[in-house]
Length: 455
Image (cartoon, rainbow, N blue to C red; front, side):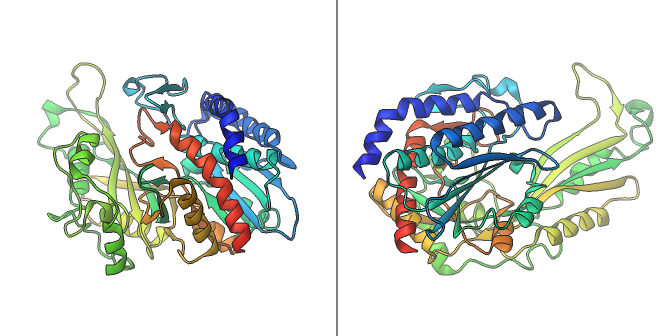
């Protein structure tokens, strides 16, 4: 609608500056030192919702960080869309790899560089500005609710209890999430699912204390060496996961789905150049897009132990540590995979060391039907602003709350993300294209219009 374009064009500079202000708040949920920053950011999101025109907005306390809830109810009889997102961000380390301050946003070559620019403050804020656009142009025809949490990056440990005890408050006809990516501005896409997650930490202990590596080396097992061998054994020569039972519940993608995925544009040379690698790596028998969407994986997220300071210190360390994650696909369950992983690690731990394993967090894989009203509305909305129909794809990341929302609220989720896989999510120099930000604000009102018309 032209009135949307006119309003957005008139206010685009303000829309951008408001996002930059949010990005300056270091809302790192994983760090206790940023607890007050989390409250500051939650309050800022609340105030932005109120300024956009919601009827009410509030901070709802949890055992962790607060949840921001807001709503605009124009008519209880009209369809209601629940917008979910998160205001917390990943830690910024390693800081020395950032080209600018992670919480000092800069715009270079049309891209906003800052932690949270894409994941997920930028994509959440598109919905706030879309709401403002519809209200200021008198075109909002449905109800909108917002559930913006502060713990997604640490596994949403308190969201389940919140949703279970606030079902009436969150009652809606669909959940709309923009915490995913699309192929490009030239080739729009919609995620039809996201992978689940199992994330554990292991501690391997050998001798009771650090030892002199000359005096004891060769007589006592080095926990770092043992841990490295154990982790290396989790994949075979075809990069297939070796944990017994790991693939038992995997729902194999159909030939039709794989053929559809193959239609997505893919330039392997450009892909490798962007990542700075000579060759790609993955499970034999599957393409790169399939490995990152329809196949489960095991990844080592961190490993440490012994002396890592400046200079040399010849020790045989007492302990070694690792963080290991599994990305899951339907119908793998996170509890089952966590148990399989931990049990397997125990089974291959030699008597020379002892193993301690603990769960950080997990989440279930989720698939959304492409014949739902919400998906059709999202596809039509993207076609209206991009000029071409979006390609359905499977996302490689995880959003732990998806299965929870469907279970507790009995409604389907639709993903409508405007980030890119190359936006350095969880990495130094995270970025979000300014054009993608504006395209999201432009497209979201169409979703609400079409969802209301189709419902």
